[in-house]
Length: 249
Image 1 (cartoon, rainbow, N blue to C red):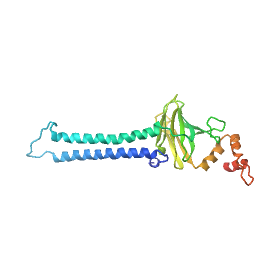
Image 2 (image 1 turned 90 degrees about the vertical axis):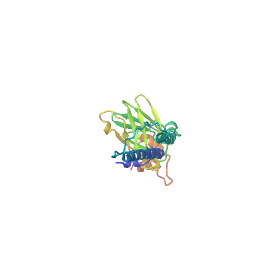
Image 3 (image 1 turned 135 degrees about the horizontal axis):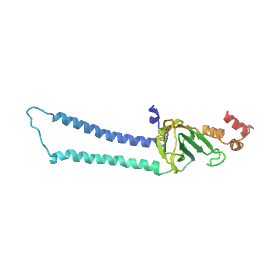
Image 4 (image 1 turned 90 degrees about the horizontal axis):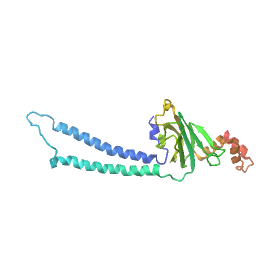
């Protein structure tokens, strides 16, 4: 079950993993230090016969140091966390690298549907491919996505890509990802969107360029696919129609 969170299948997945690791290490250190100090003080100053109770105000300089010094160190640790967090956010959410391809992602109760360009490489043309619950993409390709919702708020999440973005009715939200590992990965909705929320799942299939080209030809508009395949006449005399038929087999 945890494998989906351990697999890093996009170029920026490791940036987010390193940020979480940094937070876990620094916060974990202060958790252990604080709890260790608390139990040490409880043990050291436990009630004992013949020893008078000490009443302190906390204003003594020698005691203030126990608050001031850790306070300064915690602030420094916060800076160490915040600076890379801002850089990660900027590089993922604020900067859009040039797109190789664009896909349209539509959420609705309770399914994900997708639209992507066919063999001509242009969106909103006759050979566009529309699928439900399954998105095919090519490895080492930068994709821009146009995310929208037909009804309520959904959240498009691909754990292996470390990708999560809310889909809002009436808005088209842009984002990007670049898959770098062939395989099949879960798509989830991580925003409670109604009674069928738990069933709103899908998958994204990352393919090699050859497999993705074959999938495009097989699933695009047949007339357009044949037109794309005809120029690819092989030197041994096989025409483009035969090539497309072989791909379909």
